Image (cartoon, rainbow, N blue to C red; front, side, top):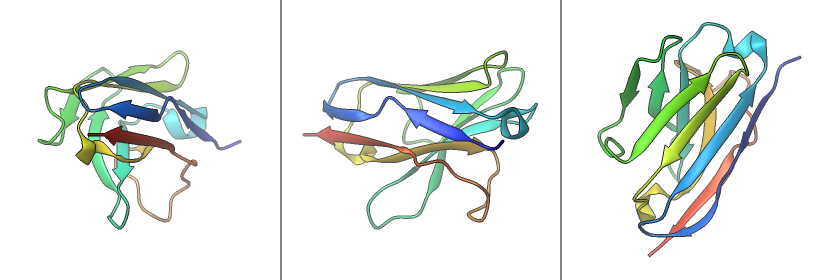
Amino acid sequence: QVHLVESGGGLVQAGGSLRLSCAASRIIFGNDPMGWYRQAPGGQRELVASITWNGRTNYVASVKGRFTISRDNAKNTVYLQMNSLKPEDTAVYYCNRDPAAEYDYWGQGTQVTVSS
């Protein structure tokens, strides 16, 4: 059974923190790199952070130093710790393999709203 379940989003003031979680089915998680993506209103979905099976990470410049991605391979779960949040981080956040195409299976995502 295929599933991606994102959670942990919410409304936070600028400068605050949130921790997102994503539970994935084994068929998606596997040994593949996993990523966190986001889609702002009117924008395209973009990859903001990714992590390999053995923990090597990569971040888009706009979140580097503020976001930390991690994974628990035993639990098929990937996390995103977001600190020093900015209004421009407001988006729906999704997890999936890295890379993932728009025609791939996607979960519902979790809304993150940062107020100024």
